[in-house]
Image (cartoon, rainbow, N blue to C red; front, side, top):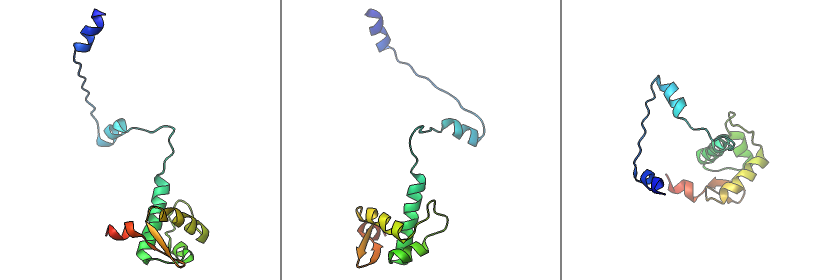
Length: 111
């Protein structure tokens, strides 16, 4: 037991030097989340959808679908737009007024 007490009282420090060009060093420092699902493409698509609604200052699901950028990860038809906007409505990012989807309170107060 005496040995364990001696170890707990000792302080340890470790230092490391990584040298090389910037990209090599950054790749060594980068952490990878193995086994986790990346949501980057989903978040990018949602951001583009919201940007489109804001740019248009609202529109019907069909009009929004027609104005979406072509470089989105997933293609959105009118039904996919309304399905997604219904989720975003829960977060006050969009609101439905009649048949027109408009920027919600969270988007209009951030400007």
